[in-house]
Figure (cartoon, rainbow, N blue to C red):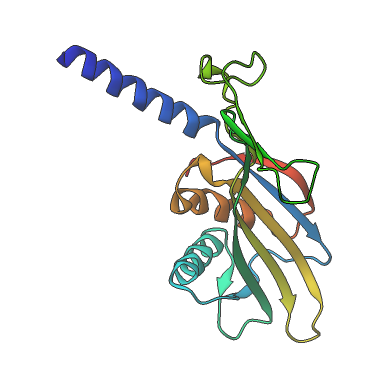
Length: 200
């Protein structure tokens, strides 16, 4: 019994590790004006939630590692916001066993019709219930970070970028640790649908 439990645990770890290795995010960006290396930048979240204040510190650390200066008096302002999008699912369908319908005669004298589905080769019934349609994910839930860099002296935009990933790929914290350095590396560049691994 112990060997079976160990084997199940080992397979679970392997599946989660494999999923983490192959999980990817997408990076997009548009460059309007240069963002010179070593520029002084002020980082500010649009929403000062606890999570975004943590992300602000992560952005500041990544900028400093890349050679930028983080300053409250900077002319270049990096503004970011985060968004969670809930996915959508289909499947299951209507009740396959009992169907109710009104009669064509709307006088109210006849009761509605009740139909009991005993066997249906296409959808399944009481005698063959195994044909239930499985629930399928149409649009996965996702997490996105939008970033802009504007010059406060003239109001002109220098750069705009956004990074997104399916939340099924892992925890928000792990994803943002991978997303933020990619965003900082892309400052000043135009990037189109560039994938990156979600491994910090």
